[in-house]
Length: 368
Image (tube, rainbow, N blue to C red):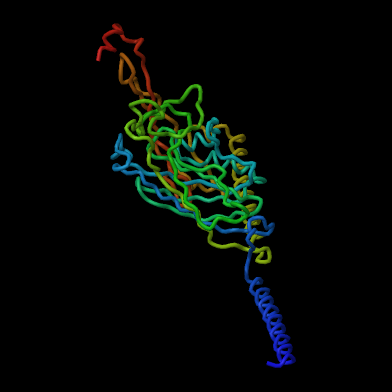
């Protein structure tokens, strides 16, 4: 080829490469308009991310045969109560005492104390979610929630029923890892002891721990007692009793205006709850009889929707005149739960009573 022709061909080739680079850049720019986030998405101030939480429980007689409760009540799980929040909030901490609200939920599965406690912390919480009860030992339940840059962590807890004060949950689990929102992550869950009830078995009576203990993970060798329902000294580790999976559903940019709408919605919900709690307090101050002996909470409109129960009866005589026995007290339902209201609490309570010191001949009591 003639040198002039070679030079012309080379010039056309350079122009073609430059033109392709421009086209590719333009296409990339157009495509980026439809892309919500970059690789550093969870560091982007306007980010709002929608997640699904799915709890799958594995409590079965095959995995956990010891003391497996066949009936009264059969194994099941309470409603799951959770929230997304900033880094300063802790729902619970391992090796630390449980708060009154957490211990109440761990012992009863009732969320009233948690709602009241969390309603006072609007500045650190972002979203709240609840998963329906799982009616059997094995099952699943799910819900959805939002997180953002300032509130990337999630916490939740679910009571194991029946149990003294055992639950599963996560505290301050971050969904932002290495600058990116996690697409999907599954976390194994193990039973936790709230440290407020001294029962060793699923169906142990409520026997308050005094002094209160700390939250501990229950293992195959803790508590170190042959009577413990999770005591399996022949194995090194207990299998997970449940798993939780977080799946990212969608990411929103600031221009979608979703972020502001969600914030307004959550603010409205918390304001309504605080108003409800304030009205309850005002009614209790006006009428000292309100709330005494009746486990009832009215909604903001004043109509009863929650279950209402009578005051506790007196304790029954101890079942043993010598040694440790049991005594019971009971209460009755005054008004059944209505749609949207809270379920009835436990109607029967049992305590240990008596002592070996009450035996006339102590030696005979311990001669098994």
